[in-house]
Image (cartoon, rainbow, N blue to C red; front, side):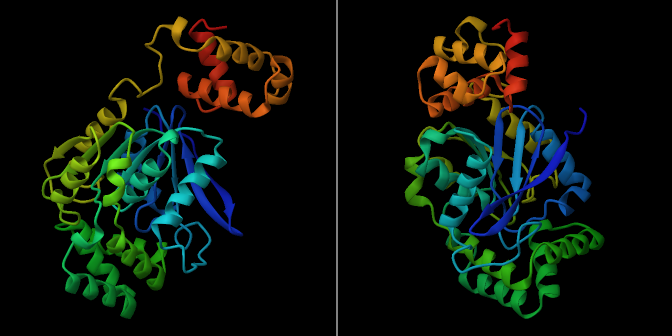
Length: 348
């Protein structure tokens, strides 16, 4: 497997820039941001890079840094550390990529944002896969523990980052702990880290679980030292038709411990029902509707959406929707790639 081409781009929201990374080619897979992140620095970690490359093979994977951390603008406003803000960022990213429907891979606290988005915009989510997720942040640990961690972060970010490294990583070498502690300090200021961690504990999507309509798989390690397994089980039990996939291990980060087992579980979840690498195995004759075949022929002829709309006597928005559906069904991220795949399948 050759490493996919990765590129960091920016979208503007509320006069601030959000950094997002898109890698690979195929069906769009958006991965909501975790607590803190840094798109440039986390690729320096071989385990992290290998994990995302393996999970995302055959997909167009999109990850982003939240406002206030990483490569995104560091200005943090009062309403940034909220679940509503996270849902709006996911929608902004999907809109920026001209995606009507996406699959979501929500890990840890990013699972709450993925659940909320899937519940509020069911028409835009093809599949929901969760790892190490929870629905009730207050249940993660005791109030006194939460307050002690937050106080350590705010009073001494050096010590606080080391404490968090111990919580997240567990029994690793001192070098690994110090490397991750340094990563956290580079990814976020003490105040941003504390405010976003407060949000982790404040998140509550229990009332939205029953509203999720997308096929859902919940992957969780039984001895997860950060997000208890019982919380993942609660998520799976609350989402209609969801599948719980328990794994052995205690590491919270999926690239730690048996990373290969996590990759296999996530890829199986993403491909369940035949949506993994697009519909290449479906009969070509029934792959696209008659109208989509008409639009595809005109796209292959080099026409723009407005020109196609004029010829078919429909609105440009309708053409835009058909093109998006064609790309999704063919599992390709661009018009050119979709035309090439259609030609391979004998649809042109």
